[in-house]
Length: 244
Image (cartoon, rainbow, N blue to C red; front, side, top):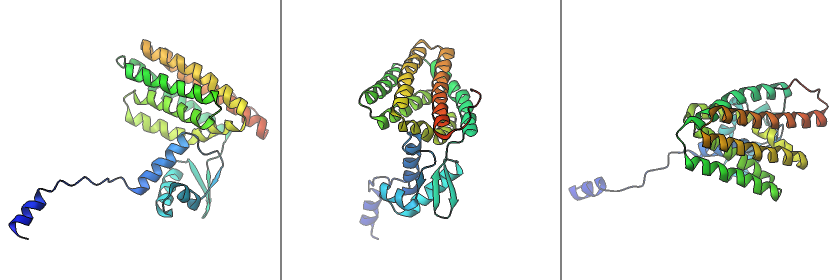
C-alpha cells in the first residue's frame, strides 16, 4: 500500500455498523408482543410460524425462544411443541402480589422525582389513546396503550434494574390480561376502569404524592386481576381463591 492509499484509508468516515444482531431484534419483538398481550395464555406457537411472521430464518427465532423459555414466558413440552405459558390461578396470584410491590414502588419513585411536565403529558397521551381505542373497540390498541402507560411511569422511576424485573413479570402476565379479549364486555369494563385509575395516577404524580401513586397503581393491578380471575373461574370451572 502506498502513502497516498494509507492516508486515504485513515481518513475514511465510515458509518458505524449496527451491532444489534438479528437474534436480539427477534427477541425484542417477541418480548414486546408478550408485554402488549399479542399472544394468549396456552397458545400453541411454532418456530417456523414465528419466523414467517417476523420475516427471518428459523435460527434467530429459535435462539430468542430459548431465552423466553428461560424467562418462563414460553413453555416447551416436546421437540417441536411450544406454547405461551398458560394461566395457572395460584401462579398468577403470586405474580400479582409481586407486581403490586415492585410496581407500587416504581410509581412512588416516579412521583417523588422533581415535577416533570413531559412525563405527565406523556402519561395523559397514553391514557387518552386507551380511551380512544376503547371507543372504537380496538382492543389491541388499548392493550398497547396500557403497556405504554405503565412503562412510561416506571421508566421515570430511574431504576433500570427495577424496570427489567417488572418487564419480566409482564412477560408472564401480559398474555393473561389479553385473554380478556374473548369477552369484549369484560375487556371494556377492565380498561374503562383502568383509564379512570390511570387518571388518579397522573394526578398523584403531578402532586408528587408518593403514597397516592402507589395506591392507584396497586388498585389498577388488583382490580384487573380480580376481574380476570372471575373470568377464568366462569370459563374453566376453577374454584375462587382468596383475594390478593
